[in-house]
Length: 220
Image (cartoon, rainbow, N blue to C red):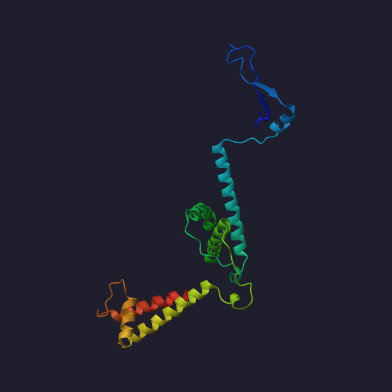
């Protein structure tokens, strides 16, 4: 036979006696000195369970390192130069990475001093997930032209502010006596999900409270 994985040849020695016992006919092991060194230098394979544990620890350490690098990078990067994060498919693999990263965020979030730092931590975590799963990132703010103008998150905030201001205007119109159907519909929508009725005696006070609440949200 050809050499086995242990570096030895197994040669069957035939018996000279027809009535030889099974012991006499057992294979004889002959050492092959040329292969001894190869056998000695063969890497030791750990137990399968230990191997899985080591691999898992290495994977977690890689994720911690990627998370830390992403957070440090985000803190030192201006908002307009942050990369655009793609939408990530809701697969079991991706969710597994997200669940593994969540406990790692506790240390960073507990040490956060303000909302800006918290924003950097959360964005860095999202960036780390994208890098770990191999998602393709596009650069924002580094190309010329419109791509470097206004970040998408800022556009969304400005749209919400514009809608809030429009709602304030219609509430003020209704409070001033404008009862056009379009204005009334808007006011009803503004109080949707509450117990406020447009026919109740203190509706003017409720309108003022709602207007003040919207103004505070805009200022924030």
